[in-house]
Length: 127
Image 1 (tube, rainbow, N blue to C red):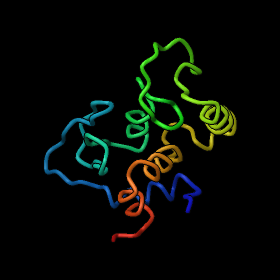
Image 2: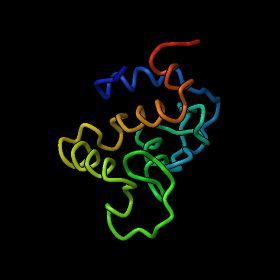
Image 3: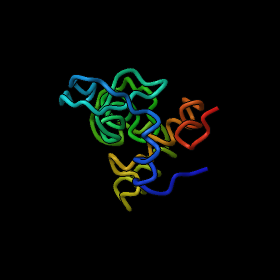
Image 4: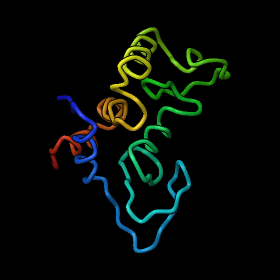
């Protein structure tokens, strides 16, 4: 099953909402907010889908699938772990922008692969 729009991802994120009485910093950007998300399988609390995706696909991770990478950063290609990831990244992030940072498309794919329980929650199965 696929989520087709950023709005669907944002609506589905309600299942990961955590409420605190006092502002706390986002684990990615450091902004202090009250409304945040905690997702099973991902360490930290985040203020937006964009911050979740930054955590999963930034720094030393593949920009498409999120796999850890140890090679030094020299270019975008140095942060894509396979030919399939490269093709998908250039087509959907840089090309049609359907998987641009914050859209949730890469996050949903990561959940499906790495956290089936959280993916089921996002899709509406609360089992």
